Image (cartoon, rainbow, N blue to C red):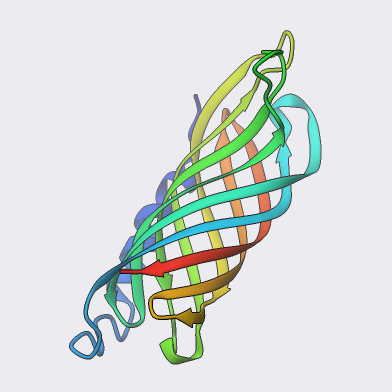
Length: 187
């Protein structure tokens, strides 16, 4: 498994930027720390060069667990992925997907506006059960995105999200894009 230096450096660069960014912690006394849980559903496009596939439309599913450090800053974990071909209990030669487990930093320049940007990095994997192929490779990658939190009720919000991900898996670049809507609950 070959992991490129450029992908290994992203999580550290993003974490360092989050900690050094001006205004970190500003207003923390005004808004208590808390946890957000989100489920993102959407559609996108993903590339799977290990299997020789071009870009394909694919459903997207993500889970985010974020901790609010201050009104402008949230950090956490994202588990997400794209299903390129559905698996089958009756035919083990079916199924293909791209998944990621990323540390995410989310920054809202003006929390009252609802807009935020996000960046992260971590572990990515690609699997394919096609007959004679049976791949299960992993590597590292990063994600960038923008979103909007639209408050619905006390603690609940909808969060439309655009995201771009890139990963170096077994020496091949895998890229994926998605547009999703998240259902978010703030504890």
